[in-house]
Image (cartoon, rainbow, N blue to C red; front, side, top):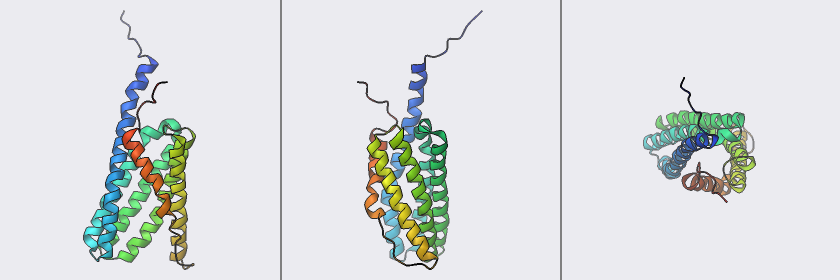
Length: 202
């Protein structure tokens, strides 16, 4: 009779790590590309070049979906349900941005801005969930997670202000996210350099 030896627990863990590392690299690279494409898209729209600007934002939307899915191998061990919430929120934000990009390509830039504002509220929810996972029990240093939480609060506050203005309330968003986006940059660097790697042994 032949028997099959089960792999040791340490071996199973080691084989799972590359998946998290690959996910971190994919998400980090996508974030890096987005930091270039999004400002260029805004600049093109401001200059009246709606079609190329809208197409760039369509690409950004696809990257949003990619990031949401790529982060799952990294965040699932920290909390399955919240990781799924974070991923779903990012995917929904990407889908909303894709719809907004369609309006931009059609020359309806004002509608693009309105839909984008709504998508940023969902994006803020993603950052809040992701940051909480990283700060409380995730694979990143807690301070990285808390910076992401702060970024999520900034986006959520700005988006709520924009939606209130859209519904006829007081105009003028506080643009807190212009400062709190630092958390996103820190997350991007961490994903590219350390994300998914095993913790250094003592």
